[in-house]
Image (cartoon, rainbow, N blue to C red; front, side, top):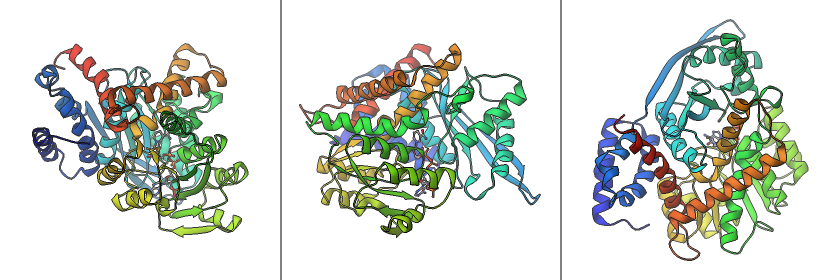
Length: 452
Ligand code: NDP
């Protein structure tokens, strides 16, 4: 990526204002920096965007709601948590984006996620704005009853701000089928209405087929499309995957189905390396371990007699392809250099912003295929968008139809990245393509509304 001196000056001046207005919010600043470094040069010869201050307005959330969440633990102690909903931008549809329950949650992380979500949702071509929310509640060491009481209390407050035409949250880290069930149940109880206010619901009560698989599968489809443009495929490629939650599990499943050899998975305590490859049977063991037993990935190493690396990430293992699917900033420049030196040819981000900016520059310099999260993991929210459509129409579509739609949506996102990011016949800057394609639709809708 080459930026001229005058563009760099505009980017630096924009960022210094943003940093001044959002002090200490490093994740939010990082996400904005990545986007504006492409958008500022792009709008250089488009004066209307500048005149109407579209970029400045896009970097300011519509609103942020912060609330207290009190609940009682199993010992009868009263606990107090902080809840958030960042309603970032609803220019192209109701706010849409997940809820994260993790001890690290703060305003900066949710603002970065909501900002990214706005561009991602635009890339899906579905009518969804961007939002994100959550709490610093950590469901990991809690009983199911404690999680239920927390979710009910959280929804009691959140219910004031959401609705099928206003804001439709979904899951994210720490919020899976169990938590969505508790929250949906509480909303139904509070309002006496059965309505599509959350996505990622169980199939029995308004959920969509393939929602759970969609993010992981979609990231692999994106990878497949990038490889196809280079006349390559996943067959026989060694793949590193980080995480072992929803996104990682289904990225692994699709990789295996397409002939890839998945050799790592991880959790927040460390990673396992299985040089023989994780097959379907071993993956079923992991799904049971992480989803049902809520145990540690290290147990896989004991069970199958493979190496476990505590407190480490998998990027030093030689491989062709990497799918970071755990959390933000899990690949730094050193990790990126190790991947490049070991012959890695492509990365698709299953997690949101897992690659630090310096690490992205390492990949770009090495000419590695790099699909950023707003494109690569958009499959999940796309199927959530289709869950909203099914709920509005009170119908359920067939699984095969949705499988086809997901594949088609990911091909379309890939093609939009190529349209805006092509540098030569086979060379595409996917980061540039995703940022510009995502920006254009939202920006044009904002222009249409005038100054609001
Ligand atoms: P899960 O909670 O199901 O899984 C998260 C996984 O990441 C777990 O293995 C967890 O380990 C690990 N993890 C969490 N925090 C850290 C950390 N600080 N360091 C190392 N590992 C960590 O979440 P999802 O799979 O749903 O989400 C993963 C990523 O994908 C997130 O970035 C999320 O925003 C993104 N995403 C998710 C979508 C979805 O549909 N679910 C849609 C689009 C993006 P442990 O078990 O120890 O907690």
